[in-house]
Image (cartoon, rainbow, N blue to C red; front, side, top):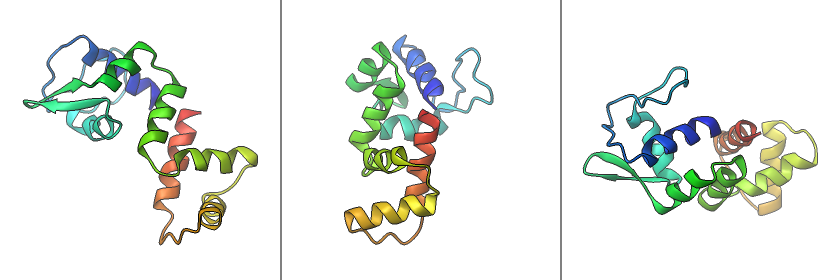
Length: 130
C-alpha cells in the first residue's frame, strides 16, 4: 500500500491530467487498477480531490509527495481513522489475533462493536505499513 500510494502521488505530482477510467502509468506496479479504484482511498486520506473529473493533489498530497514515508502515511491515517494509533498500541505489546485485539480495544475504550470488520481493516493497514 505504501509503495502504491507513493507511486500514485508521484504521478499526480507531475501535474499530468488523469482520467478516472484510465490506468495510471507507474512503471512497475503489478495489476494496476484504474484511478477510479484508487480514488476512494486517496480521497479518504485527503491526499487528492476531484477537480472537473480528474484527481488533483491536495496540500497534504504535496506534503506527502515531498516525504513519502511509511511514517507519514501512518500519521495521515491516524488523523483520519478513529482508533488507528490505538490499535498499534495494542498489537505492539504482544502478538494478538483480530478477535483478541477487538476485545482489548472494546474493553479499553468502552466500545461495543457488532463485528470484527473495523478491527480487521485497521490490523490489515498496520500489517501493510510494516
